[in-house]
Image 1 (tube, rainbow, N blue to C red):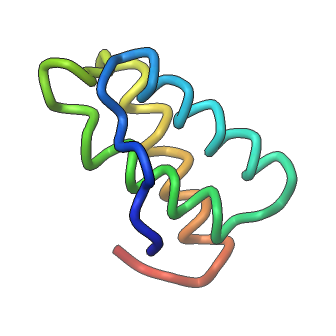
Image 2 (tube, one colour):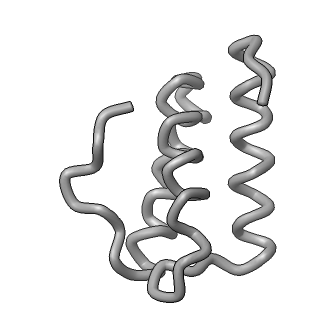
Length: 74
């Protein structure tokens, strides 16, 4: 995993990363989508970068779908 040059500092930044993960999944870049999705989950609980339960659930589902596609677990 390559470190982010500018880690997300706001909810908007985190939501933008979520959108990027969804786009990568749509483009069938499951490895990239998994990487970005895991990054989102890592920062989504911080007060400044918080995502709501629905948004977080969407990212968790995306990460799980990527893992299944790539044959990875947990």
